[in-house]
Length: 375
Ligand SMILES: [Zn+2]
Image 1: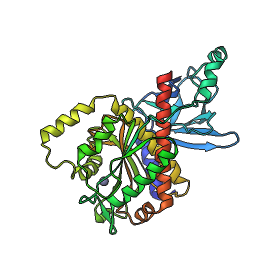
Image 2: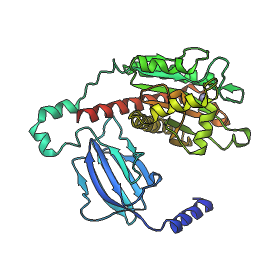
Image 3: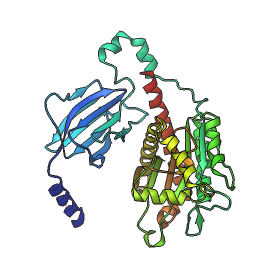
Image 4: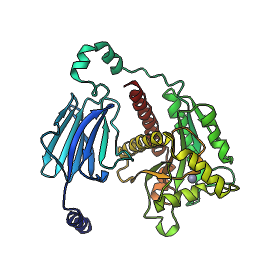
């Protein structure tokens, strides 16, 4: 730990001396839901796994279990413990292939959710009463042949997108989009590409297909960029979903990505389009899809590249996502302005880790959605 980070730690202890308390823990809709005494900062969660047997561990720093009515065991897969005086540890067992998704619902910053292995939300009694249901749930056969995914490679034609070290965003995102198409088809999804070559598309052309063909997800692939004086500092992977935002950085990125598609639209028609989608349930779905995709991309990239920065899930008013009335996300796969990241972004091995992460995220999101409908 550097002297600076030690100082930061000391400062944060001085500024936030009181710990957060977990006041309630329950399992609902296949998720462990934790409720805190005050707004909880999700940066205080550390996630890692232990093997033999496989366990998913979540450590909540600066947190205490409030009282004895908070259950320490919830069903067959979940244990809570006050691991150190200021750390609550959640241990989840039972995962084999799929991974849990942990997220903070964006409408409630006093809570934190972690998805559980498939049968954990059923009480033991229920499982013994209805063994046939459990058998069905344990081996879900989800046909993907009706789950159309639309992949949108950003920019194209005269619109090069960002340029870094002579490399163009439009070429990079087309390479990644094509790999993603292959990866998703391999998993059984039908895929539609908004562009398969170097051409410019107007906004309605990008999103129309997602609406008319009943797509289950719309994924726009982009690369990020910052001005020269910051190019060595800023890097990382970010996933966006559509929402109006006051966050200045998100707005700047959105502005850059929006420039080409907004030509010819009046401010009034922009506002009308945005208003029409901002209040629908699609945003919640897009948020969930974004969380799943971002988390699987980071897990995959970190298996081989330790220093890749997790820029997290953010919201921004991207116009390419406005027209698609489907769960829609925009993935900024990295910064083409950053010398090291740019080099990696054009490497096939790196691209494969990105698309594997996106595909796993789509899998996870759709499986969870199916489970929510079932329960
Ligand atoms: Zn772009």
